[in-house]
Image (cartoon, rainbow, N blue to C red; front, side, top):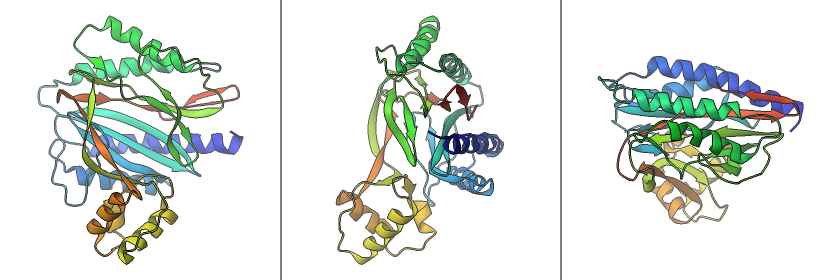
Length: 297
């Protein structure tokens, strides 16, 4: 990493903080998820960032990988996870928060514990830190918190790369003996908590896609979409509502074709196994020389 890359991480984080403030203002019970997503997209662009990936809006037991399409009628309710990404010159701020939209505040304790867990993990971020330090800090908090909530072990933090949302290493939120040093890089720490079993399963596609393979496709309409995605998004995830703005012909059919051929990959929704609610809080960190910074907090 050089100084220009570090500065790009910092700028992306500054935009992310403003977008989170904006999102909290527009998220209310009963607001359509598509309106929240479109508002966040527009705010990122207004502030001079690029959208790193489609905003994930996970309701209740949906932990990740859902973004609404233009025809989505779902509204904000229960507990909502907002996971958003901002890109500046290819370098990404990845951040998430959870909102309790219940009338009785039933998710308040889970979100507060989730915040406490992330705060503890944040305190171990330093020059020379190990991957395993994060899990140790998280588990120490959870061991003292009782049995009401558990960490979802299958969902981890991760490294960040140029135009890459997830790179090595994975950063588990449980005790582990990974001695890899996190140095001269950007990475995200993102603990997920639940009142359920703490396991996830893959559901149906959640409307988020990425380019998987550059293979040929015979259908002309699908080929136009592939060429557009390759040029506009490259390795970064995208969604159908963005493509609808370009007025592609037979978009739904073309997307299904490209997924079936293995050229596009549609991320499956990640759902808590016992169908219990999930919370998520995430921040991006950068270690550069002697600089240690949480860019999104």
